[in-house]
Length: 227
Image 1 (cartoon, helix red, strand yellow):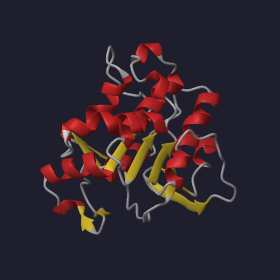
Image 2 (cartoon, one colour; image 1 turned 60 degrees about the horizontal axis):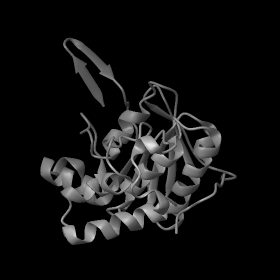
Image 3 (spheres, one colour; image 1 turned 30 degrees about the vertical axis):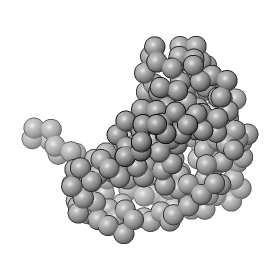
Image 4 (cartoon, rainbow, N blue to C red; image 1 turned 135 degrees about the horizontal axis):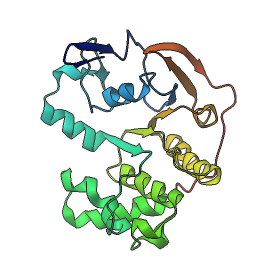
């Protein structure tokens, strides 16, 4: 992946090659500026690579139109970000329903699907609360419920514990681990070894290259609310 700023060329990823199997839980780990977030943006159809090939579900990304990319992104992928990205002065229920606005699901089913996702992360008693009334850990759990509401195949989590204390971070990672155990493919971006070790496998990125790709010998576990 190469970025161009006027006459300046910056290569962010350099010949990166790996495969993620359906149902895997993979951590992509590296320091700031290593290329891991750019890699997530490519994997999540948020950016097109400037070279090479990316295959998703047996089809090259280059074969997708922009409309098709948006469709796959909304229906087959769920995203959890460090900054939560919740709408203020909007209830938990309405925040979680947002991805359904762009789906083909009937509006009459939205409330039920959103409530199911909210219950899955243990926040059924907070349905009518606004983000300002929630703790940081609860807000991240709302973000997870929003990522779940379309029942995606793949969940991308970009530094999901970065703004949380250790207790809340452990709860969030427990939820993500529980989603993996229910069959979701999970790709986690992190710079923390502790967080990365919740996965089955860690891909370490440094200066745009894969430094190591290894199985986790002993996985960490956390408390899960997922039902």
